[in-house]
Amino acid sequence: MSKLNLKQANTIVDRSLAKAREMKIQPLCVVVVDDSGNVVAAQREDGASMFRFDVALGKAWASVAMGASSRALGNRTKTNPNFFVTLAATA
Image (cartoon, rainbow, N blue to C red; front, top):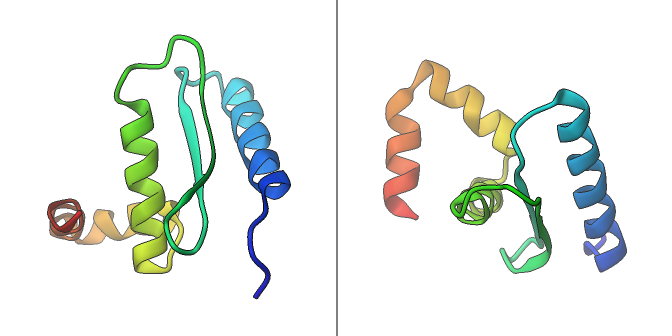
C-alpha cells in the first residue's frame, strides 16, 4: 500500500473545499491524516467556527481507527445511534 504524501493530501483538501463551495455549505475545515493518524494537511476556511478543526480531526481519526470512511461510519449511526456515542467516548 502506498503512503499518502503531502501533494496527495493537499489535493484532497483542495477538492474537498471546492466541493463544499459547490454545495454552498457553511465554511469548514478539512483535515487529512496518514494511516497512523498523523496530520498531513489541514485547512480551515475563513468564517469557519472554532470547533471545525477539532471535528474534522476527530472524524479523520475515527476513520483511521475503524478502517472506514467517515461517510461509512455516519451511515452506521443511522441503524445504530449508540455506535457513534461509543466511538466518541473512546476517542
